[in-house]
Image (cartoon, rainbow, N blue to C red):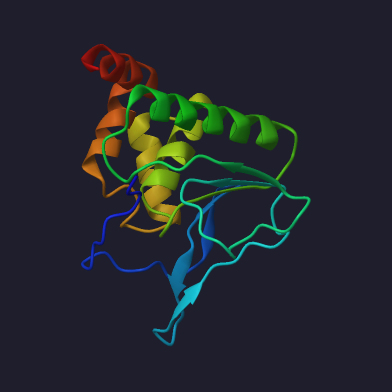
Length: 168
């Protein structure tokens, strides 16, 4: 399964990860230093829970850190993949409620992680538009540039999942 498309017009983020709301961070596996040099973002033990939507060897987290891996494409998702996104968002909310620090990450930390983080914010009462705006303000204007993911959020993941399963 191909999980990441090359998009040369999309710049790497300036930070490995950014805090979207207290305790909930969004990030990726690569970022650009102020010098312009690309660098790998390696998670050690900065977070209590790391959720990975694209797993690359050597990017952490350290042993002992709770790590959920659910590889999904940066494109159309089937009902099972959407259900996994919903489970990750629920686990992130439970961890936040317990006072734990959560990182949700994908390649650049824009789309796949944005989908999970936005759904978590919506579970906590934020509107789809409010969640998208907050993520773009705190992570990058490039966050959630995948219009399909934005439509999933506007439709609601439960509804999008049902529609995907009916189409199969």
